[in-house]
Length: 390
Image 1 (cartoon, rainbow, N blue to C red):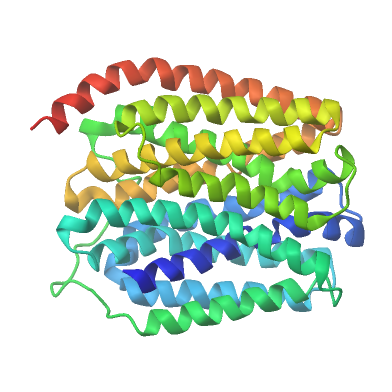
Image 2 (cartoon, rainbow, N blue to C red):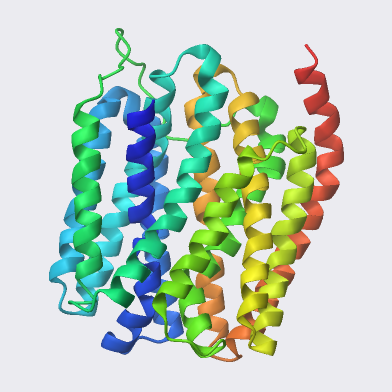
């Protein structure tokens, strides 16, 4: 299990690695906020259909083979970033990253679960969620530190570091057993794979919180480097990267916090924190205060960790064991949907309003979604208490 978790960590780093470099690319290629958010979101646009297709077909194709292919695609994307000379090469590399991580995400979870004994399934799911959050935070932190303090080829040196991580993950993968079923898997139909009996619960208490988490997190990953530079007035790229690590790393580590063991309660408090944090971030922009920015992201990180953990736990608990991999893939599908429209929407809004006011509009939409989740959680809590009491 440990080797697979390390692979998930390094691939998750690669998924967000470019985030701290957006100001550098914006300056070098003269990109607007809208173009930067499109560069960020095109990754998720490609990732979603890839995740849907591979999530249904990975078992029949062979889990380890699919993971191997995904890492090689990620390596190809990294090499393209290293040799890129113009904007179309950046977009191509981002598309390849989307294919790579979309191929990897659902498959990695299924592969991890097949390597885990039945009594440790819940632990494996919990650790995979923590590792994904930490990886998403470590990616921009590493790239930000490299580009800020290693003054050698700022557009390329960070990706050499990523290339080393990906090669290590490939080596670790080859050391793992196949963990395939002895019988040939049944032909899978491409679908979300959500059983009818939990469909409403899934979208309201699993998919929607995941969407909100990635919607707000996507704004952070795509625009915080520019926000730090233009509103807080510092050009230190490592600060933006470390803030993102705090947001996502705290979100991962808070899942180990022993308080509030009831997952429904964790979801309720987490989703409120997730909504409150971005408002403090907006206020920090008005006051041009780095401390307030850090506080807002810290609160958002706590909320992200608890809501993400609870939603992922429900995705693992509600379906039958044979339905679990596809339901978890659908969970990530809903999550990554939050990476697409909202960041692009904010990019469009910045053509007419300030970045700060654009974030106010986005936070207002998120607040309405949070209210719905809180109201629905009353109904869900009765259902969850029934199924867990047996």
